[in-house]
Each structure stands twice: as C-alpha cells, then as structure tokens.
Image (cartoon, rainbow, N blue to C red; front, side, top):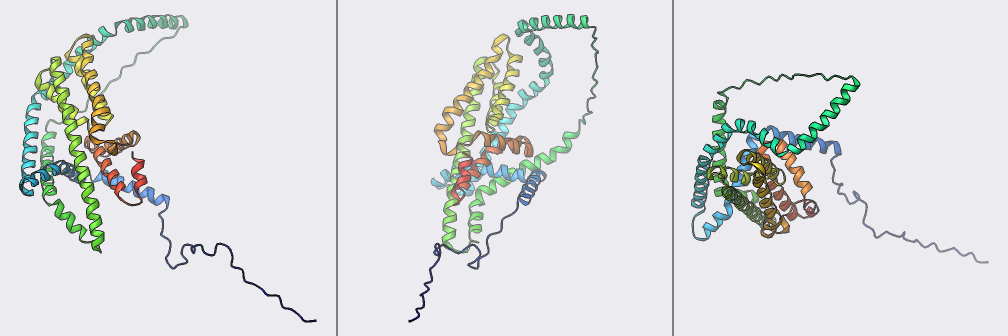
Length: 377
C-alpha cells in the first residue's frame, strides 16, 4: 500500500479584498470631541459674543453696511470711478441721508413721547366705547358672581400694591453720549475701510494658502459668496425701504401728518429686517397709534393696512425678487431671532437674518456641508 498525503489547499477567506480597518494603514483616526466639550465650547462662544458685544457689534454693522455698498461701488467702478472715491461717495451720501432723516424724525418722535401719556389716558374711554357690549355682559356676570359670594358668606379683601419708581438720573445720558458718538464713528470708519481695503485684505489672507490651485478655488468661492451676500443685503434693504415708503404714504392718505407718517414708515423699514417679530411689533405699535389718532373702528385701519402691505411683500415681492434659494426655515428664523435678540438686543434682531443668510451661503459652497445648508431652508 502506498500512503497518500492529502493536499491541503489554503483557501483565502471571503472579504479579503476589503480595505483594511481604520488605523492599520499607519494613519490614526481623526479624534472627535466629546459631547461635554462641544457643549462647553458653545457656551464659551455664546458668553464671548455677549461679553464682547461692544467690540463685535461695530464690526458686524460695518460689514453689513459694506455689503450694502459693495454692489454700488462695483457699478461705479464700471464707469471708471476709483474704488476709493466710490466708497467715499457712498459713505458721504449714506451718512448725510441718515442725518437728514434723523433731523426730520426728531420733532415728531419728541412730540409723540411727550403726548403719549396723555393719549394713553384718553385711550381707555375709546376702548370702553368700542367694547361696551362685552363690558355690559361682564358686569352681568360679576353681579351673578357677587350674589353667589354673598350667599356663601365669603368676603373679598382689597389689596393695595405700592410701587416705587426708580429715581432717574437726568444727567445719565450725558455720560453715555461720548460712548455712542465713538461707536458711530467707529462704524463709519470701519465701513469705509471694509469697502476700500476689503479686497486687498482678502487677497493677502489667501496668499497664505500653500498651493496656487487652492488659492484659485478659494478666491472663486469667496468672490461668489461675497457677491451673492451683497446682492441679498442690498436687495432686502431696498425692499424694506419700499415697504416703509408705502406704509408712510398709506398713513398720509389716512390723514396722518407727513412728519409723523415718515416716523412710522422708518420704523417699519427697520423692523422689517426682523421677520415675524418686527412686523408684529409694528402692527401693535400702529394699533396703539390708530386708537390715539382716530375714533371708532377707523382706529383699526393703520394696523390692517400694515398687515396687508407686509403680507404682499412677504408672499409676493420678496420671493419673486430673491427666489427660493434665499428662503430660510421659519423655525430656524425664530430661533436665530431669539438667540441674537437675547445676545445683542435690537441690533441682534436686525442682524440675525443677514447673518443666517451668510452662514447658509457659506455652508452651501463648502464641500461636505451642503446638508447643513439644506437644513436651514
């Protein structure tokens, strides 16, 4: 008998062509921050934004105004106006127009503040006259409740609440005037320098990138983002100005004096930068103004027309002009308004939407971050 040795064939296990596990190629996996560290980082950033608002807000306002003026400067550059002169012209016209507008608004605003307490006292009789049927029904219900209380032997105790008004320092505004003036000058100067030297600063920053290909791609992305953001900010500013002008014209048509109508139109222009919250404040303000200015149901005309103009702007004008690419989620908008309003007050409400649009445009142009941009839509 001859002994035969069995042939042992080495069978390669299935899946051997799969890539090696992470870390086997010599490159360690990318470390990921833990959730507590991320939470602490978010809290630290939020506290920094709140604590340093005196430094951050002038810079953000200057960038906002520079984005408004950049399309105008580019248009002037096409007709061979140097960027320096174009920026100086835009700053001069913008600052001069703002000063003239403030001069027109000081007198009606002062009269409104002076007459508001007396007007609020006269507001109660008008409201009682309009809601007299409801008031009579309420009195009947109170009489029934009083009879039931008397039958049960219960007595009501009257309580007097004493409120102490905080003493106001009449000279406090004098101490804050230099700070306000310095902030305004800082915003004006920063806006001018952003308009003139923003491109050079961007070019020098991009020169720090290692390869020419990266520099070229980054320049294209940043240029496209800057142009889209400038177009959006300028367009939304023009739309809000049109809304303010229409509301001022409607109030003049209703019989409101032109100076006071200009005051409410300017208020509508500024409040329209904060969607939902701003128009709601404007409607409530014009409701009070209507009751103080008109009698009977005519008092509801100013807020009703304000709501009509805002609805036409929000549902027709803005979507047609800007398109759906600039639309933002209402939930994200409300959250952004809450966060920035809590951080920076009125200025935060005005800057929340432009900042959110900037974030969306940047995320949509960065590879791998398109999902986050779609989340904001």
